[in-house]
Image (cartoon, rainbow, N blue to C red; front, side, top):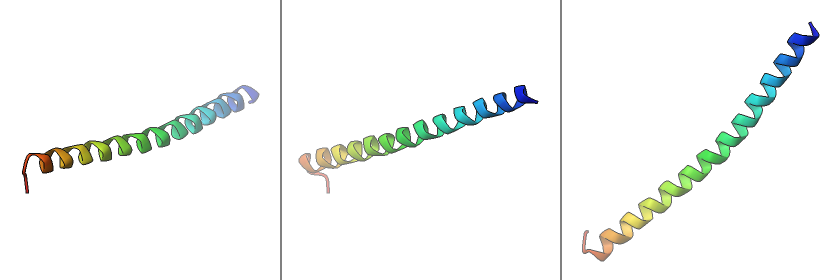
Amino acid sequence: MKHLFKIAFALTLCVVFISLAACNTTKGFGTDIEKAGEGMKNSAERNGAQ
């Protein structure tokens, strides 16, 4: 029974760490997409698009 508890605890820790990493990655990805959109908008404005 102790062995099962250790495995469950280790899996829980893995899920927590992966979830935290995913949150940070998603936030960074959103920032990158926002900057890309701003760059495209600025390029369009420089080239006379309306």
